[in-house]
Image 1: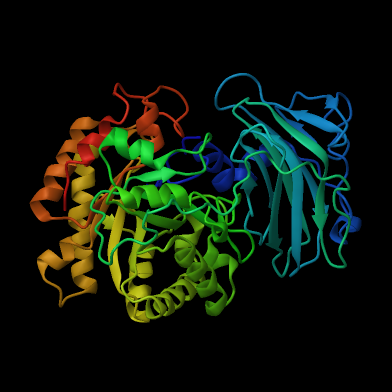
Image 2: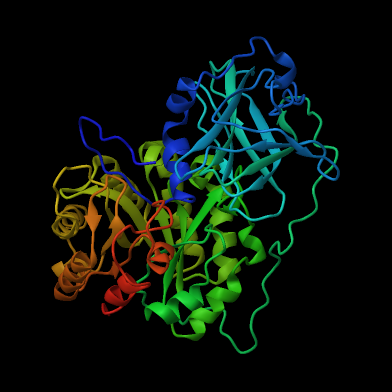
Length: 508
């Protein structure tokens, strides 16, 4: 899960769902899986025409064309789901079961990939030259769930490797087959597992609870909350326990050019809106964050400005949003075409909804934004977007011995200078109001630590300069106050919600 530092350090971000899974598989899947010896099936043109991939066959001695590492499985039953196969890593956090099959595909072609699975953090994806991994995964739980995604091959792509992985030794199961659908269509699983119990429907609006906050509702403190964690976090409960009012909800990604909560729920249904309404009844609000380190960023998935605008607009309307955030990192930050498309769509969104506040959350070093990050902000400015806030991901610098409290302050100071260059007509106070800072509390991916004293240091700095916003990654880790996997624990001594109570002292 922790990335190995590169010779030339680059900022690493920790905004992801699930954190550990995306860290290993979303950014380094091809390398890790190639090392696991995935088998190639040359000339499997049938798969490219929409036929089922070969049966995964995880039972002993039956791997067939699939090649697996760390998988210890057998047929575990049949019935409503057909043959079900175990896909389990060895005991202990950090272990994975990685299985893959390489199939022939056609260049410049869109494919659909799906499978019915069960388990906490089961991953389905595809990698290949010229293909952006369309990673989808389960949010956890006991019910069967269908993972579905699409990807488009590059002009020279002739094969892809389809991956199915279990994570953290939690136990993961596959029902029936993995389906790859290409030109001409193809079969789908003949027996669909029942809709998972408790699948979200449109959430009713509580009687007397406002659905849209008053214009200008401030969110000086809005920690990120991983809404894809399992069980689904309760923002009202976290607000009450941590003395908070507002949160940044992550993350809305794309399933094709359709907005999705972490590839699981349709925002148009108002999933978790009852929680949003409850926060607004307390005088708070939410920011919905698009992007993150996992899944497909909508601006990359949607190929036209109008299509992208329609997805953003649907989410804004479903939740009555006054604040939207765009967490742009990893490969997305260097995707110039997607960044230009996003800028144009956001300008159109603000014209349709005057007063909508837009923030960008971008990786930083103590020296400030990278050149790619500056380009994202400049693109938005040039397209006519009114950028309310630029939020520095003050984390994961991969510098041995760095003081992460000092580094967060330095990053905010450097960002202020970069914003001055982009907006020379603004006053110092206006520029500080555009600066946000979001550290990763506790242990970071590079094993450096951001502790309670560092949080108090940042709050004091923010009070001195009146920063636009403070946040942290993430509220669930703060609530757990545990030692263990970094996607759910801070790994430092603390009380539950201790960081929330420190950050809540900042009032803007």
